[in-house]
Length: 437
Image 1 (cartoon, rainbow, N blue to C red):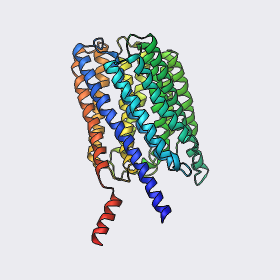
Image 2: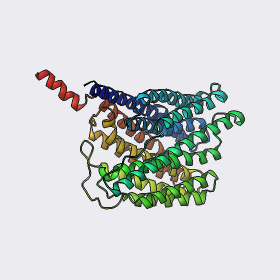
Image 3: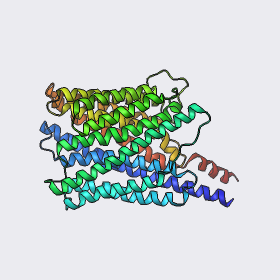
């Protein structure tokens, strides 16, 4: 009985930890991320250009979204999932909380530094060091993970493949944090402000997005989508090829060889989609219990955005004149692909991770995904037309796209907050049984 009670207490502690990580990510998404991003875009629309907007503010928004939101989600889920392994219980929970303190302090300090510039030559590299320290603690905790063997040969190979891809994404995460520290030190010693120089920022964004969240999402897609969407098992060879192509693309982007980089990004995105069988006919009915019935559709839409983003970036390498094509490609990737996947998969798995709960409202899930994709479509189209001068009237559409996306982010956060505030069904049943007894 004592062993059973200890296991329950350990599981409850893990659930509290991952819930705090997720709530922290949601707060970074909403306040420093989405609201600041909307403010920046409204200012850009009013001025018909980004020249009058502080680049440090734009970078503060991006850092809060990529690291504060997506990074917190990945670290929290990683600690939760891998800390459930046998032999990791004694120290995993304390390390998860220590890492959370370091991560939250680092991301929060970076955002505040970019906005208010208080002793920024010191606080900018300190923020990067705190983020790196949080990740290293995570890495030291989970590095001994080994995938469990499946029931048969195909299952084993799939397990090893998705784990390998997630490991590649984790290495991309580490390289992103190291590059972030190097850029922070460079700005601290040689810059006129906390903003990273535009040329370097463009190369870093390729690393921060394509090498880190994109690859990680491919790995978890290989793990979950065959079950959730009823797809056939992923093609391991194509997925491995996609990761190799994507790695070559990131290396080209870091060298500012944009034409081969963007061509390779497009090739990698198409190869990954084919390897995951995203657009193939399902072999089994999707598992949509507890979520909205359009869940499989939005996952496929996300991969459409992935390919579209890569194709737009290839167009940007050939024809961009004012940053509109580059901006549209980044938005299609970060909002169209990454955010849509997080909205869809997150609302499918996070309620279970955070206390075996059930999603509060599938309708709110649909509304968040619909608003997100409508806003992204308006943003991508108007950014190309307005910035590049093809249709200047589209400058007036940009603020509306920001408001629609902000609404989507708010609905997503509210749905999860309400989910976490519910009593889990198994506890509700125990309470009713106790009342009857």
